Amino acid sequence: MNINGLNFCVIGGGIGGMAAALALRSQGAQVTVLEQAPELTEVGAGLQISANGMAVLRALGVAGKVPEAGQISGGTVLRDYRNGRVISRVPVPAAGSTYYYHRADLLDLLHKAALRSGVDIRLDAPVATVHKHPSEAEIVLESGERLRAECAIAADGGRSAIRPILNGPEIPVFSRQVAWRATIPWTQREELPCASLTMGPGRHVVTYPLRDQRLVNFVAIEERSDWQEEGWRRQGDPDDLRTRFADFGGPVGDILSKIDEVHLWALFLRPVAQIWQNGRLALLGDAAHPTLPFMAQGACLALEDAWVLTRAFQDNSGVARALATYEATRRPRARQVVGAAGANARNFHLRGPMRLAAQAALMAVGPRLARRYEWIYSYDATA
Ligand SMILES: Cc1cc2nc3c(=O)[nH]c(=O)nc-3n(C[C@H](O)[C@H](O)[C@H](O)COP(=O)(O)OP(=O)(O)OC[C@H]3O[C@@H](n4cnc5c(N)ncnc54)[C@H](O)[C@@H]3O)c2cc1C
Image 1 (cartoon, helix red, strand yellow):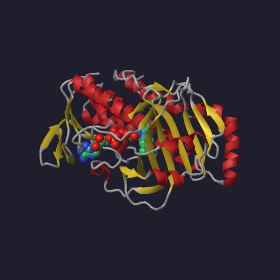
Image 2 (spheres, helix red, strand yellow; image 1 turned 120 degrees about the vertical axis):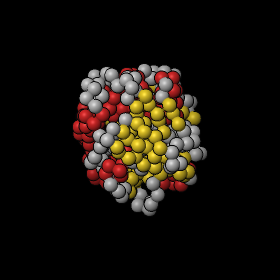
Image 3 (cartoon, protein in one colour; image 1 turned 90 degrees about the vertical axis):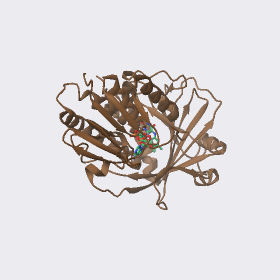
Image 4 (tube, helix red, strand yellow; image 1 turned 30 degrees about the vertical axis):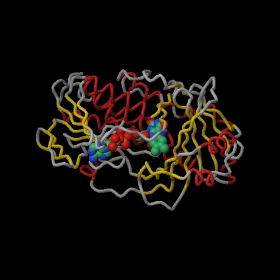
């Protein structure tokens, strides 16, 4: 791959933006990242990175360098909400283990690797808009400063300010689901750490270890209609959370009793973008394909995007051709994965007789469930 001398501007220093910057730089490009935040901070939360995401982290040379990251080597346990009874176990996918990371650790890893490789990272640099010129993209910061690059990559997240430049204005739809997120200290070590998915009527809870099992990551999804605000840093009330999940027993009940700080995130829906690029500007990560978190694939897709985008430049056929190849390769894959996550929103929250029937079915097919999603995990963008 030879993109020596090409000048890229990446908008957004999240997981997708940092991975893209690192991948492009590793092939010789000049890369500037513009991040709106004055410092790179993260809410305390975990990320599961499945084999398809790990393939990219390995290719970027950053996998395995966080001592605290670990493998979910025991697969996923499916539990009933009332007493935590195990309904079924989904084994580790054939494609390989899923790893768990603290978001801040993964971001820090990417950030440091990007800095070491010579990426120019500018904080406190919110971008207002991007103009397309025949041989350049012009990036306009909110401060009025203007930068020029041969290619601009918008990795500015699910509420991207840049996406409407390509797709026009869109009104996000509230999914009627909110996510409560917390991490708590933990002392019970497991030989084979696993993730737990505990399903109840209208709600489900995902838990898994973090930082060498010293923390537990807790995500509780609840169906709700009383919400207007989009955002993920809103402080929640732990007692309110406990009341809303009071009928959850077993391990979840135990974790709930220990939570003293929680954040709330309303889940809004935007479709996979119709238009991903215009020959000088391309969308990447959540900006292109926001997803409900029910397959734990948003960050994994952003990592795949970063690699495929970089690879699209390998035949030196120009920026416009490379971006067209990137869009054609990534859009069908993103649509498929986002669709699978949307389907799980219904499956996890069944009520009454439907839930009992689904549990019976899960008991029978649980061990084979990993195979059902093997097409997600076995995809290797770096192959
Ligand atoms: C509850 C929950 C659990 C999840 N769990 C998982 C999981 O286990 N595994 C997984 O793979 N995914 C998971 N995800 C999804 C994952 O968090 C996202 O898909 C991923 O963070 C997207 O990365 P990104 O870089 O595209 O966007 P973001 O992480 O949102 O980063 C965007 C960056 O752009 C910056 N920015 C925004 N606007 C501007 C601007 N105008 N100018 C400059 N900078 C700007 C922002 O400050 C931010 O730093 C989960 C999501 C949720 C809600």
